[in-house]
Length: 599
Image 1 (cartoon, helix red, strand yellow):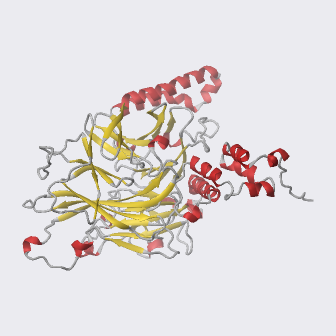
Image 2: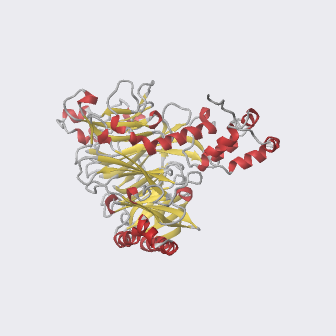
Image 3: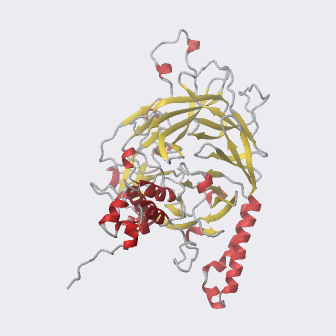
């Protein structure tokens, strides 16, 4: 006979405590423990610890997990948000356990496929190669949390659209088309003579990006900032034969559409570029020896060791007669800049230089100052030596038999080889979280054509390498890397270049720590090529998602780059689909959408 279940009894002492004491006790707990203490005791304590009465407690726990800020006022029940976001993160770690059984099913929203076809202009020109459609960063999630919107650009003609519910097609959706040209420039007024007509020969569309604008004091999302870059080419007889143009739009949270168009037109072709959504600025490093550029304060093009910051202008501020734009300020590095990225706070810029060094700069409204210069080789030596010393002490404490069974004893040889390789390998790209600052989450750098990633974090006042990821993916085409603050995703091909994989790595936080004992977790920490160089461990490999395991889905053509965009709910990547998904006998290129909420 089954015994009736009884609720755990709460301590009379706990019931007699004032709310602030209970809140203080629960604040030291991770979310599952806090829920057990607050919700599984009795009705009185459940009422006292509900979201309305102790919203500050659940918000503090939510922020400790380093989740993306909530988007809508109606979503500010942080207890529910903690439940939802934890479920999504844990779902990402496990979704591939069932992915092999997925296929085309009516009404099934776990996996979706959206074909991307060439633009009408491309078809008229007779180009039937669909791989040309997704050659650049032409699609991006508009939300960093769980929103269903996506922004898309056709790189063939520059047409852009924002679809509110693209990732959940069963819902009602709205489509907003954005124009690169200002409204007054696209009017029907005819020019007075032929010389007044635009004489652009070609536009090279680079891609699009969406970044959130966040109030970091309240951890509140204020708006989304969508931007796109193009290279404009004109006849050499005109003033600026080659120029860079950045156009951006803002969508305040609660609004349905993007507006407040801003832009900046700069002579010359950019070499490196990044957008700061918080201050509405663009940071640019230019091609050297660009004859089309003439600067007021420089006799030649700014050197490759310089990064210039320009404020975007509103539509009524743009003056096309302006001879030469002046930067707000300039970052003058010690060596040629090979990569850089702007922090989401708008206060820091992380730069890599050609001589395998890094610089951290602090920026404000009108100036920049260097905070830290880092030698990649010295940082590697310090972090690896710390790990080797720890392993040496461990070997002394363990018996010979224990050491022979310990997977970590293979580390010294691997780490010494990596030190030699990475000391000679420049930093190719820098990846920052869109919503979490480098002070909190650090950043990730890519090396060796994507074969190796380094995770940097601030330790005792300076940035150090805390983890190394060596992945088994092919380097024929550089894999796509996404770093959110809670996870690292790598989308690439296998060594045979025939199949694609998304490698998933979990980034630790105070409430979701990572064990550094490979022997207890079955070696999974060492899977995916993770080497944690400090304590506590910061990264572990948790999953490999194989799109090819889904019936009817194949990797893109071997010559087509891989691209991935994601938020906390969705993963979106370019793939090829067969007749099972499209009804066409030919393979069709498009976007595969994985909905973690439906897993």
